[in-house]
Length: 170
Image (cartoon, rainbow, N blue to C red; front, top):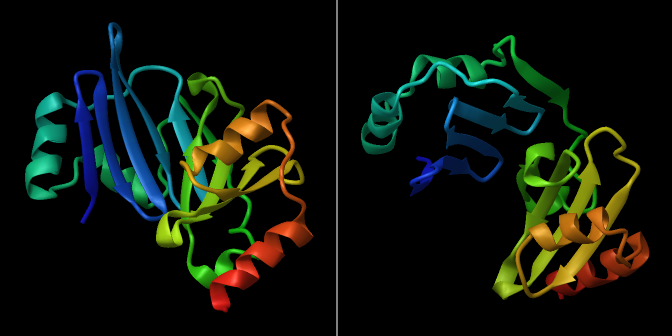
């Protein structure tokens, strides 16, 4: 079942490795979707009604657009990108996965993360340049890794990150 966040400006439907977001703007409704494999976001309004979104929230009945997204049938006016594989170091921990996209002020970025005992272990990578990576361990939101990546701030090296991950098994 999706976790739902709702505001005057939109809806977000979340699963651990999937997000479907709708943003209400003056000229229509825009959307962003990602799962484990793909990122898709609209550059023009998409066809979906507020009633369909409300029904999805209340009953779980998926609108046609959402059904198509989930089987990777993406609307024509969307930017679609294949995501890099889940981070190998985090993979054994079954991490969650979220994306931040260009119209939120970031380059398209994928973040794999876990949050045991209130500590965030996150790996952010640019979708178009997956070799550009930032690893973060600490208190705070998983997006910290994406912010550090965006600002070219100091991030943990892989060895340091692995050392921190190893402490979880102890």
